[in-house]
Amino acid sequence: MRFMLIHRVQQDDPASWEPTPELVERMNAFVEKLTANGVMLGAEGVQPTGAVVRRRGTAVRSTDGPFAEAKEVVGGFLLIGADDLAAATAVAEEYVTCFAGVEEISIEVRQVVEFEDVEAHLAR
Image 1: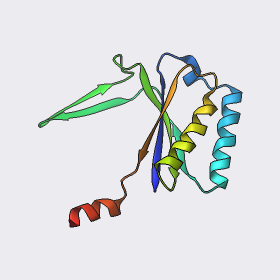
Image 2: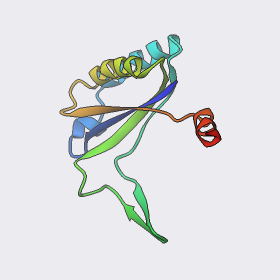
Image 3: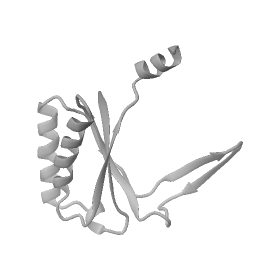
């Protein structure tokens, strides 16, 4: 199974957006470990700015960020392979320790819906 680990940080915390050499070192070691164990499928950080595109009925609206109403924003993600949610959560619990120095961080663990799952659902 594939899982996405989405880390969210405080938009106004400089430590979230200006990584220290120590954070980079911890993150590199963590990624190397996951890669060596065959767990890592991908990982990226994201910028604090972006856009949101919403559709209500037929009306489509785009809003540029950063987003004043949000204090917590996505800072990046890992895509991993794990046997189940418990195993993916254990990876997230280790992942969060890489961010020492960041005031507040949360890791959302979400299972990726595989194409085969959609096909099975449609076949019912």
